[in-house]
Amino acid sequence: MARQQRIACLLAEDFEDVEFRAPYDALVRAGYEVDVIGAEEGATLEGKRGDEEVQVDRSIDDASPEAYDALFIPGGFSPDHLRADARFVRFTRDFHELRRPIATLCHGPQLLLSADVLDEHRLTAWKTVQDDLRHAGVDVVDEPVVRDGMLVTSRQPDDLGQFIPAMLELLEGAAVQGRGAASEVT
Amino acid sequence: MARQQRIACLLAEDFEDVEFRAPYDALVRAGYEVDVIGAEEGATLEGKRGDEEVQVDRSIDDASPEAYDALFIPGGFSPDHLRADARFVRFTRDFHELRRPIATLCHGPQLLLSADVLDEHRLTAWKTVQDDLRHAGVDVVDEPVVRDGMLVTSRQPDDLGQFIPAMLELLEGAAVQGRGAASEVT
Image (cartoon, rainbow over all chains, first blue to last red; front, top):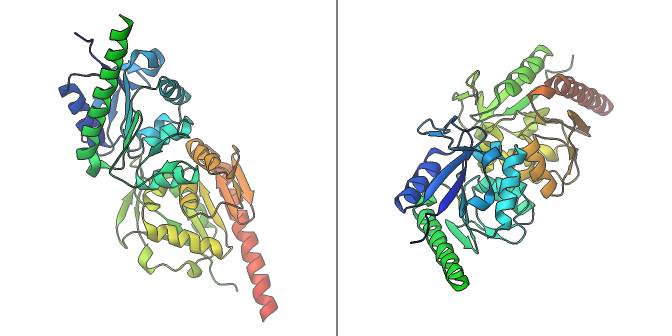
């Protein structure tokens, strides 16, 4: 049996509550192990609407990109806090280099922009972040969900119904590919 | 005697409390009339730290750029809310065309970026917004206060001690210039 896939979820305070909760629960239900990675292990992070309180499973100082099969970045103002901290920017850049799945929505692409990994991607984001992406010369579109290679993005909470299935499909496809590669080696 | 100068302050919820309060009080003490312009007249806006509650003096629907001598945009997450609303983006763009003073700090330049008015300016901003400005090809520097023509900018609350005097100096200079022009016409 294949080992359980691990997902890194980068999180800071002021996240958009439902953009954490709904994808997180969907990932856990689908059998993934999700590590909430924050600035400080054990700290409690509150969503911007006060609906969710989330405990940090692991400090960014103890998190290695190689240990994770995918990266999930919820929106809200959490990504702007994260990209103010060089450790999260570096984690994101290093993870992107592994060519493994990244799923993010709303303000999440701000972290990808600060990590300078968007040159080759087509994506969407929250409408104000679309402005920044457009100004940066990134290929950005205003659609509910955009799948481009190993990157899946959405704009806002209303898009979650399309974002979650697209994220799960991307993860499953990458996992099958990974298992296939492993079989060939055996 | 010259008429009282009027300042437009564009504001939405989640503003950085002290970045509204300290410059606002300094402007009022210096004799300026400051109109807080928001989405809805009479609405109460709360700062992101819960320290300040501010009542909206005038709806953006009733605000004309020509009626104001200067524009002040506090930081925090307020600017990202404002730039999601085309009326504030249009007000900012139209105000900029008048070549009157603009003072902003922290996330405030996000609104200037969405209004597409930064091509010709040198400025600073909150460090994560500096990323966006740099990606957009804007001339951005990491300094406590930057004065460039009719634009004065700072990075964060720590810079308020330099931001406020620079803002007042810019306004006074522009007012003197304006009175000079008015005298010439008379």
